[in-house]
Image (cartoon, rainbow, N blue to C red; front, top):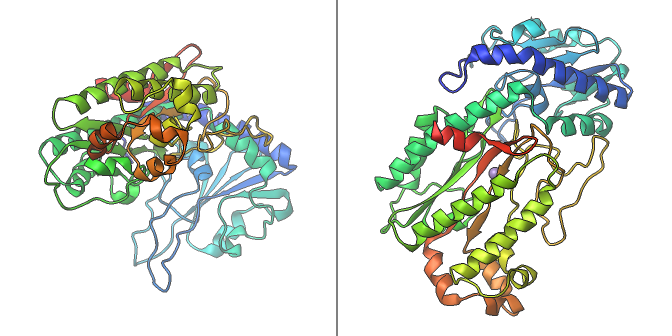
Amino acid sequence: MSNTPYVDDAVLGSLYPDHIQTIKSRHDQALERAGAGHAVIFSGAPRAVFLDDYDYPFKPNPHFVGWLPLTQIPYCYVIYTPEEIPVLVYYQEKDYWHLPPANPEGYWVDQFEIRVVHTHEEVGRHLPEDASKCILIGEIDDPAHAFGIDRINPSSALNMLHYGRGVKTAYELECMRGASRRAVKGHAAAENAFRAGKSEYDIHLDYCRAVKHTDSELPYGNIIALNENGAVLHYQHQSREKPAKLRSFLIDAGAGICGYASDITRTYAKESGEFADLIERFDELQQQLVAEVKAGLDFSDLHVSCHRKIAELLAEIRVAKGSADALIEAGVTSAFYPHGLGHLLGIQVHDVGGHQGDDLGTTIDPPIGHPLLRLTRQLEVDQVLTIEPGLYVIDMLQENLAGTPGHAMVNQERLDWLRPYGGIRIEDNVRVLADSCENLTRDAFAA
Ligand SMILES: [Mn+2]
């Protein structure tokens, strides 16, 4: 397992013991809340395709990945008992159809007592004897994988662990800087492919080659959208056809390091002109929002302030007319910008805990009129989140304005001008600091 050239494994190794300390202390508190003595964290089981004998790509339990950088090994268990060295039951199946996992090695192995097993029965022998003192964390489809533990994912423990995951350790931050660097290499290759006139499919292949990920290793399916397709928020195809005329390119694509993700979006114009100028203007808008990020900020407020900026921009480019208040009130900004400003990022691309007000299970609702905002909690030092304003011509949402006061505020002629370009989204990954933020993504692009 090498993360070169994106991260130095020696640096990760030097940061990892403190990371494990933090993970342990979060589990100490989680166990106390749950009134349990042992946490058993299952890496997960592969899922078979219906009526067939092969599996969907394996996606590990993120709580397991939080302990150690094993993202591709099913049927493993971390067993944690406070004040004891954690046990890793490492499942090395004897299977001649597949290549069994290699022997455990890397900077992480010293932090565990590792017990390599080869059969399901052997796993059971390493679990704590009294199942009633255990909680199990993970997805259990087959009761056999729970080995008699019946407290599975108790919310008392998970609220604590999910809330804790919002704040990253120094080790996790280093992984995430690397994940941004890795994705940026792909973004550069993709821009070149776009400029060379390649199809979405070929741009996607160039991206994967540059980051050295297979499709299933990507933290999420690449969004590679030419022209109008940029208006489809989670555009899921990669057309093999080259469009007759190339106008614009929106790419939302990330990469992973040790199970930690980046999530980056850029938009490009094929030619200079009004749309290229709009992208530049939008980039300024995005950077103004990034400049607001600091500990103590209420993210819902920043999201609402983004609507105001987008209202002003729509008026400035004459796509809509009216005051910012009127455009927001009438739902015009929401028709052009129907998603949230950002979300927590980490092991999961949309990391858990964004709506939590504390570690007890109190939730904070998104502001009225903004139900899709995934992050409502107050920003804290060392949270990592995305800042991703967008602006699109989505006909379905424009049609919803028909018959409302918002409809007359939209300039249909200017909408027709913008539609063939699809839309714009610019997304960076930032780490919250006391008075500002570290922009992992811009730092990587600048390197
Ligand atoms: Mn995102």
